[in-house]
Length: 451
Image 1 (cartoon, rainbow, N blue to C red):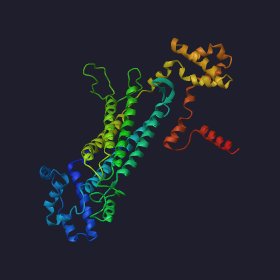
Image 2 (cartoon, rainbow, N blue to C red):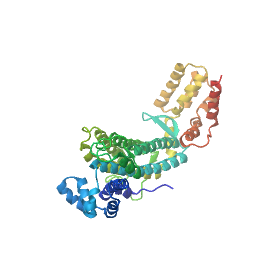
Image 3 (cartoon, helix red, strand yellow):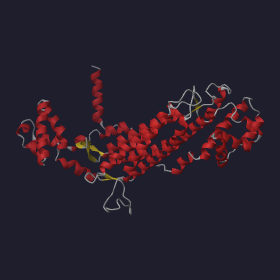
Image 4 (cartoon, rainbow, N blue to C red):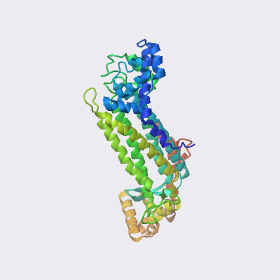
């Protein structure tokens, strides 16, 4: 079952109500820890727990005067709690609350993005197996090289997204650190055990050492991971854009009934989703650069990172959530044209077999240099004259002095390019090794190593 996309889910993480709730969650767990250690009366903690709430509009009103969001928040909470509010935020600095809650927000966002990637992986796996043996031309420098399969292309994308899944899982762990250590991280007015307790209750780890803040190299790693994922999506989207070009047309974004491609030209079917993803990847990388700039702060902390994170936290995670799901939908509905792939593969009159012929001549005893010259001479004539490559070879006396017609029949067999596809699929997706040739080859290498 492929999970469905809900744009609302990611957006809700970054709504003021949720951000302030995370602040309150941190403050309440700190009060709980202080009450459990006898630092504040348990009765006071019960009152705080029962009455603590906030009002977003009231916080905004207070902040107009205080010019300090955390103080405005605490004042709003205090108005609801009453006298016992004096125990809230005791021994803390603003960043204890801000950084610990920011870790919770990023962790929640990362979990949605990880689920998005899992959706992409399901779709790419299905495409890979559906087109495991769908022949197409492989290209290097944009020029026809040798045959591959569309399934292999999908397998390649699948494994790249697997690596992105691993990266994001690691990055989630990297930012899942909090700190309750006071103004410069020295625990001057709060016991380190409070930090241990609070972070444990919130599912975080305590930063082993901090200043007034959790160090921003952690966040730089997180946002750079998001940028890498965005760059992977751009890579895939660029390929779809190429495959949809009119002179290629091997795959195409789904064109819905009633969809329009151009205000001027009714025939147009443009790769708009892929182009959109290509542009958004540029924006994703800019967020990573901003996160890198946040690493270097003055002394134990300045506030220059704060304004940046208020933008890149929601923007980068919401954008990548959108990109992953747009890509998933595009791939799920992708139109593939196997017949066109075969037509393009055959466009160069059999030149894709040039390396096969080269190796066959070497096998018959010709030096590599001479074999290369012979094959290239015929290949260039095929390019220029549009003559079938195989026919030129059959008419070449020098070639036929080494090869028989049946040798060329064996060489000009597209199945030669497919014999290890199953082995590659096993390496990517797991399962039983269908390719006994490769298995036997590895066994023979093991035998030789024991001699």
